[in-house]
Amino acid sequence: MDDIRDEVEYMAVICYVLGSNPPQSVMKGYFKRIWKGMGIDKIA
Image (tube, rainbow, N blue to C red; front, side, top):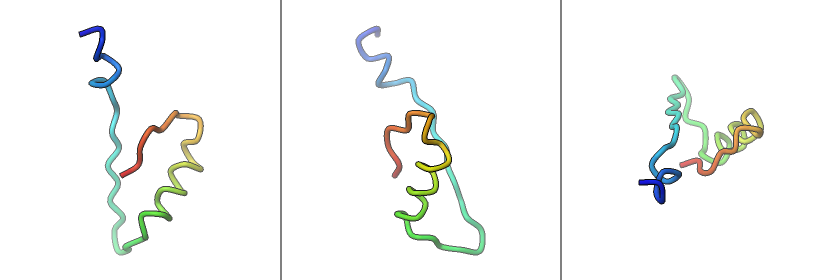
């Protein structure tokens, strides 16, 4: 378990934008700018 602990312990944020459909690139830029110090690994 110690070997894979970093792979299985994670936090996820799910975002839903009401009344709009922004491109994923815009959302990626927003999250990276707002949470730049949080060590985000992946935005999908």
